[in-house]
Length: 249
Image (tube, rainbow, N blue to C red; front, side):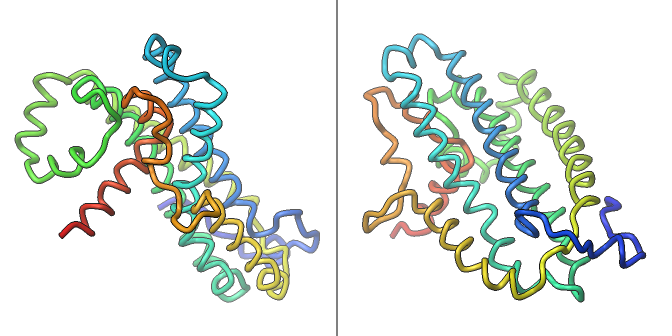
């Protein structure tokens, strides 16, 4: 497993000079790298589908609403770490917290990279980002793999290889960040700032002050279903499809 643990020397572990973001810094870094990946993917898809995008929507609106959608899914993915933070950010459980941050952050980044890598082939087949069909067809793995291998062999190989390489790079990046990650805030400061951070996260996830939180349908701002799907991201699209399927009669 990645060597992300602290040095045995306590002076190296608990630095006396607090940083601005303290223990929240690593979550902020994961948030930024996730937003960067999703924005670059959206940019690539827009360039690919430029004729339809330019005819349906102006770019500022697409990318501003896209950032809003990306903040929603990143907030949802980071939420478990944020909720556990005040319980684990202390001298007794600091190493456990670092292991958890490494594992969960790596899973977050690999997940969104995989979903964005799978998006172009899905669009070619269904003219839409991955949605509930992406989930329903998982019940037939042999048929799905056969279809992918026959019709989308190169995209499949490229997606798997790219996800693995990106995961390896993300792993090294997280190791580098975590080696510089110190418990430089007292516990009372973590507990004092935590409610505000949770409130910010809730606002990110809801993305609206109306009665119901934001959902993909709210981002259907054009008459072109494909362009509407480009506004959001594939991870949120599939998550919301799973959520709806679980709540169907």
